[in-house]
Every structure is written in C-alpha cells, then in structure tokens.
Image (cartoon, rainbow, N blue to C red; front, side):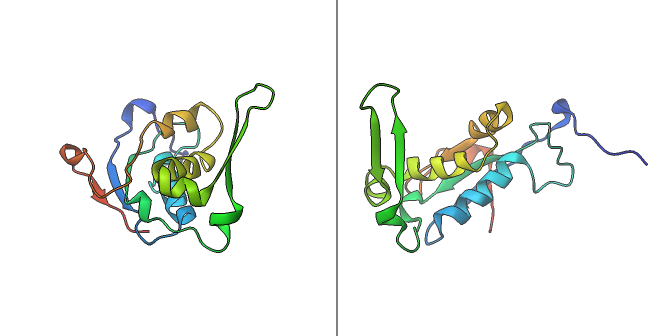
Length: 142
C-alpha cells in the first residue's frame, strides 16, 4: 500500500464559522489555524495547501486570560530609526479586536508561502454579523 498524497487540483474547500465569544483568544486561534491548514481532514498533506475557509465572529468578546491584557503587546517596527510601535492588548482589544485575532492566527501558521495562502482564507469580524451566508458555513465547535 502506498502513501496517499493530496493534489492541489483535487482539494475541496469547506467554510467553517468559529464563535470566539467567551473563549480564550489562543484556543480560538489554534482551532482556526488547524482548519486553515486542513489538519482536521484525513487527506492532509503537509506540502499541499489543502485547508478550508474560516470565519471568526464575535472577536470583540474573545477573552485574554491572566495578566495578558496588561503585559502582552503587539509590536511592529517600520524599519526606520525610532519606528517601534507597541500597542497594549487591552487597548487593541477595545479599538480593533479583529486585528488581535488575525495576528494570533497568523502567528500559528507556517512562515512560508503555504502560511501566506492559508491566511488569505481567514475572515474575522468583531461582531456577530458576517457577509458569507451564501457560502453556507458550518459551525465548528472547539
């Protein structure tokens, strides 16, 4: 018996919806990253982009546990002298919760072209409403 290798042309992508309300940010990001890579499917192949589309709703209601709201920072450097920007997660979750969730998921994807392709299939919304009803997403419990 030979090992099964998924082909890029034969990938069938599903749409999943994750509700982040009341759940830890990290656990939501892990579930989303696994779905984006396709690790929940039996025909998962590491070198093929065989992931699914993921919609995350209620990003504003995601929970940061412990002292993370005060001690965790989103850090970005522009590349210029003095270009370091730090935003405390407490502030980030109030002003732009979708960015906080996106960065958490992006950090759990591989740092190569497969991770970049998977990240394009992530859709994050701060509230309950999303515009992907036509794709008939399935609710995913984690």
